[in-house]
Length: 351
Image 1: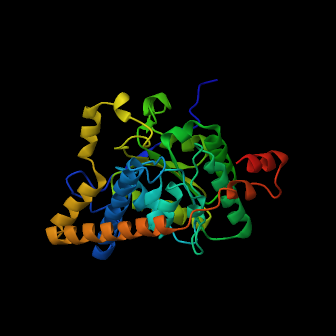
Image 2 (image 1 turned 45 degrees about the vertical axis):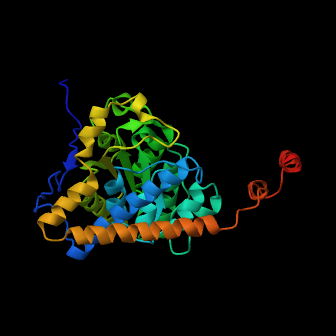
Image 3 (image 1 turned 180 degrees about the horizontal axis):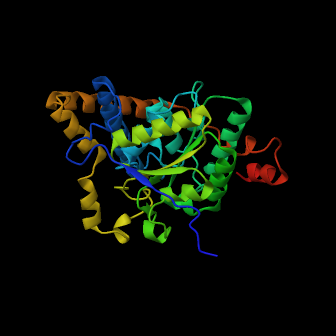
């Protein structure tokens, strides 16, 4: 019997906005000038939040923090395609997603300052708490998508993780469940090239991370993660498909972590300055600014106003967060189980 080819796969990559601010008009999503400016202002606000968070950590006013520097377009472009009724399952590096969805900034500072009440999601938003263990939010997302399908809710579930998360068993189990049951979930991988000190080529032998979706029977697509238009377009198509009941999508946002893994890391120990410098030219905010400048949407005065507004908003959020009365230390025991265990009782007594 002859050898037959029973399956082949094609992995597409979407690029719309290049590093010089030029766009492919045939692929450009329908966005008004006001919406494009809104994207730029969210990018600026998220980066301002990030820079202030890093400063607060260095001053001892905040705990260990995971910077989003360089990954803003992957987060904001995808979040803008979501509705407040959708469910979002973040990892520990999605502050741009929280900010885009309208999460109170002071609560984010509150959380990173060590107060877990900062991730008690406000009414009207469906964002699960920050997930620090790598990849464990993926089965939560698949479960929520299964519940939505059972209930007939026309919503999408978005799950964020990094390239390192795709090496975890939870990721593969969740992808398999999503494929088998055609769940309304969009898996969004921010491939920032490094899982702490482990480079992407040590994570997988696959040419792309996006192609992993093919093994589970659904579409995987790679996008330029520093191109906010491409990220938005790919995510919008994926969430629309999910809401129609046409199943999951896996989006690989090809981006770069410009900062250390966290404030407890020193990336200079494992990557070169030349590599970082090469990615600086791909800055997502810079390329959108170049596009806006070419299309009469940007000026020095506009830039000054955007930066001043972002700084004012972030400064006010910090003041609000730091004015909140600290939680009772005993709360870490009180709200863990329905009833205190003998060990907790002893720990509280010795506290």
